[in-house]
Length: 205
Image 1 (tube, rainbow, N blue to C red):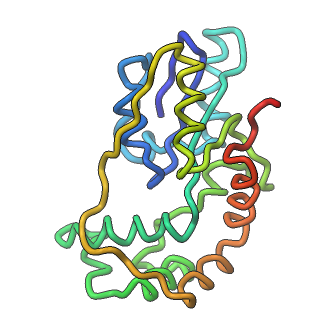
Image 2: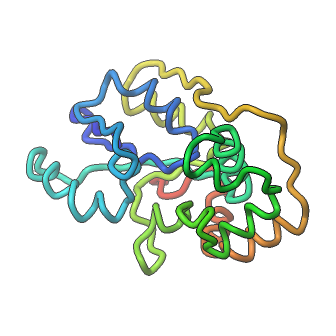
């Protein structure tokens, strides 16, 4: 999580949505930067609203604007799969060595202990009733919209590079795996479909 006091703006880092590149570009402007532990860095919107924003609002005297990025649920799980396969000597990586992506997707959806810690983006961005808590959510593959937004807020050019990309061969996603993910994470898919209409949710018209 990054907080920019001059803009009264916070970036909520949804895991596996290119947040490393955004943080690299914006950290020089940040008044507060949480990089570890992971639960603090990837603070959910509900936790931010409940615990962090009240303090920041006390300092600034107004509500804090927030933005985040969302990725297609299937592509995001592919990224998680490649990331963990590439770390075979870690606890999370060891658990999935030898698994196909279809098996990994099934493990995630069925909360198998080998991949039960991979959260949903709708849970990250929304409250328990599915109400969006983030002011501006950008589609992962519409970097043009995010860059325009950031340059308007920071009033100078912002360059977003690619960082922390997973290595290894491309992962083929079978129709069966896609069906498992899209059915098992229907709420996340519904939010994604809303987002893809314009590439951003919550932006004032």
